[in-house]
Length: 351
Image (cartoon, rainbow, N blue to C red):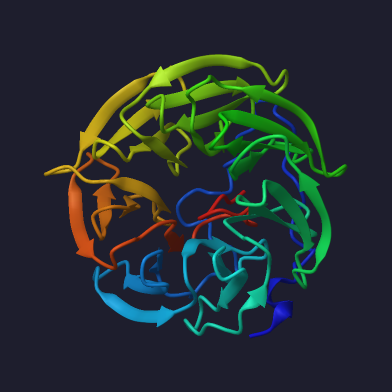
């Protein structure tokens, strides 16, 4: 596999409509697999930050089917915009390692400076690298990963992001300064910034299905902030649990799953009411972190960041289906394949 693996098939639809009530996740329903991913084996790709490996699990049997070395500190496994490649982000090794999800074969590392996390512009032209340590956001050619431009950000620790419904801007969370930035996609510049609080540690970012609200997990404040997508103003804070970290939309767009890493729970937030409907507790506790929802919507897969495991959780009732022992430092696992037309990055933000 070479540098051309991320080349977008531009015949696919471009950005979805603006936030007018249209469900931005309408193409993420169970069974709505792109022809590109149909027939791919259902796997979970788990990067281990401690061993530098990727562990591959079979979603049906819950058994390990592969394990291979990729670098020093792999952070996240990210689907490319065109859905054909999975990129392993290793910011300590300063590279991206491509995986062919159809065969499981991994290719030569592609040099990229400090790729803590990876996103793609909705038109498929640019990869957006969160160079967390460098306090920088790098726009790269999604075909070759060559640098196009760098944006120095006025914050510390840019790490997670999500795009507006129209794709004209995205919000980036800055973990170590408590800020959220609004980045102009086409202009590739910081358009605005807000500080959530003087003790905030913002993590994952997710747009509501109607495109009107951004949800931002805050690991230090133990809950989720809401920000108006039109005015870029804070509109509220929802307590969820200690160490609120990852955000995942259900396949029916009705609820948001919030992983509370510090207390071993998952909060289920209703988009209709904006409240926590229920809380699922992992037996014996745990450290649920990053992951994703299975293609059929029945299983929420999360890494147990400090427990060396992966959790498979029923989305019907929160029951722990299986706890699978992996490496000692599992982080941003990717459930694949997933429904959707194209990937905006992270561990599977598809539209």
